[in-house]
Image (tube, rainbow over all chains, first blue to last red; front, side, top):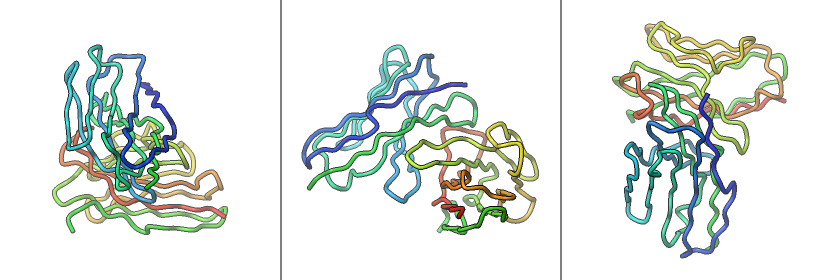
Length: 110
Length: 114
């Protein structure tokens, strides 16, 4: 089945610094989704990317889908303590089955 | 609250006991998905059900695990004769149609096997 590698596994930043997490696949993806999971919480859908080279922004979050549709990134500008959590990418290759990356745990030092 | 509901939120079982996890989908949703999350891991697909039908159980261990989504009532994920390796967070998601793009997750059940 499809697999995705997500890096880094952990990232600790000072409040105000930027943060980026990356997802890479060996195969071309039809779409990719991003989720955020707070400690002890459940995954919350952030966004879906479908088009090659697509860039979407949500306030301080910027999501990119690579030109070859094999990689994606999530960038947070000027992190805040509320950004703490694990960020997952997920492949929605089939009609219903989501394949999740292992996630990047972001901690923010105030 | 019209969100996906799961109960119990926390469940402790001794080895060999049975665990029953319940999931009530969002109102109007007839598609339910179960995922398992081991510590510091991503979520792994287990099973996809529609009312009274199992559509895909390819991610579910063949022994001890079963799932159902009856005509009336919540979806149930049942684990018989639990072992320590079953300790994990089990998340249910639901969608209105068959879609990987529109799944809404419940708060999860944290199962601990002692």
